[in-house]
Length: 235
Image (tube, rainbow, N blue to C red):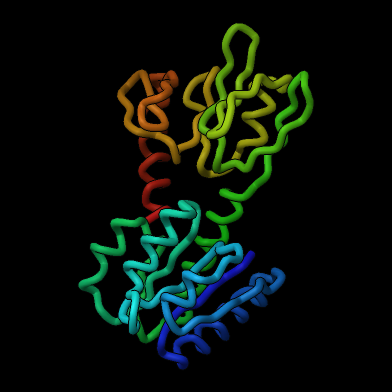
């Protein structure tokens, strides 16, 4: 994991870095690489992996809204924390799906709680899933699996890059995809909530309506609740 901090206030940069180190010690995980910047231009020039970013809004040169939008367009899975004293930027920040909006001065306990949520989302997004086929074993990260479909004894894993016919039965996928962003909507379908476009009482439309999956009527309320909770967790 790699965490970046971008703020023109050096005190905030040092405070955030200190709190992040304390957080990882508290949850007994390895302290990740933490890189700091004082301008949006310098952050945009960083060519390394970016997993979590803490981003100020009002900075000289490129402001945080512009920088965040650019970074998010290149990496939709990036988790961005906006840190600012100005609440009027909230609507603009939400348009590019920031993960959380933190006020200055920083509240350590609130930061810890939001970091805990971020780690859970990060782990869910970056889990590597082996897909066994007749041709060999392929690996996909969980976030790139759109849905699993079982039809006529054939199980297909639909991913962003390809569709793979797997030797693994639907029961295997029910077990291995027991993580928050997946939901078994029908005995033959397991869908990734990330790709839901819309749904009714019998069908779920996925990935800009390119696919559809069955939704068992008795699971409608449970699915709706899970979907709304998922949307809330990604705001």
